[in-house]
Image (cartoon, rainbow, N blue to C red; front, top):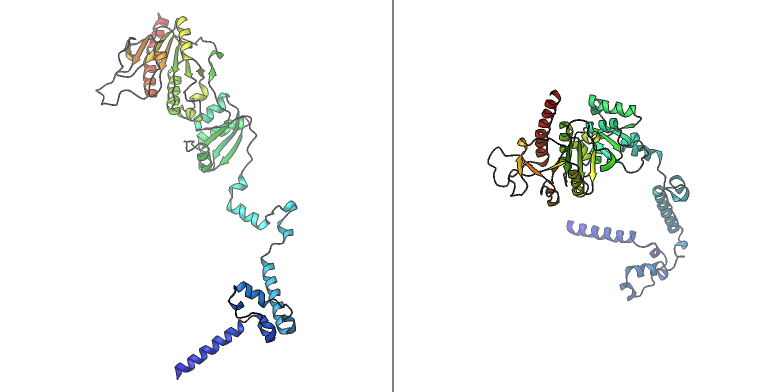
Length: 389
């Protein structure tokens, strides 16, 4: 019996729900509510809806129904109007979207760096980023570049004495100093070791070979000639050793050689900013001209050189007695055949042990430093003896 009562109640609820969900037009007279034949009832629901709403005057005969429709439209309009943004408050002339003061404030809070961001200074021509304390300081003091802006890492780094000396030099020369984040400096230097200091300045290029006189300041001149040195770290290390040991001039081939980039300046610990490095289109022609002028051309080879018609001498046994040009070749192949043909002597660094297969020579920058030290030390001692006598 309880089951029968429950079934009766369930049917009652279903019938009442069907009445509530019945379309508004179905509350009118029976003759006007149905325009569908049994065949039409199987049509698409959209077609059936069009048939139901084909008589718009039906709801007007029932005030209660019309009032319900009006209230429903008014409620829908009120809800939609809350979601709409009035054009007069959010669009300016030409339909340009304007941000409210609250949204602008929120944007500044999310990106606090925008508050302190300073406009970039005007730049003339192409600029590059010099990084590192020594390169930046020497670039400022040597005056060979056009300096536009000094960028310093924000935080405790800017309080170090070395960084303060760079900032003071920039301020003394009227260069704008700006504080930026470490992330910005890392991006500018492509992950280089910037030490919290970067300098936006004009590039530094090779000097033209004939721009200065060939005469050296003192003693027997020794020039270092570099052919196709492509690694900027090697070039920077070579320049650093050459400057420290007292080489009179450095000349590099322009083709297939590393340019004087900020990486070279950093690897040289700023020496590139102070030392004049020359570029030459044809090293062979320059060397032959110097041979006619009485210079000797000395090449370099590995610890186990191949058979050559040119005499090979350990660098420790060679002594500079007249103007000399020391030739150093590329990292992988060494000196080219054209330059070897001009050489009068080849120098090598003997190994201190039996070398394992595959280990035949030193790094080009290390080998250059050893040879320069050997040659220049002996040349300096010889000059001192001659001056005493």
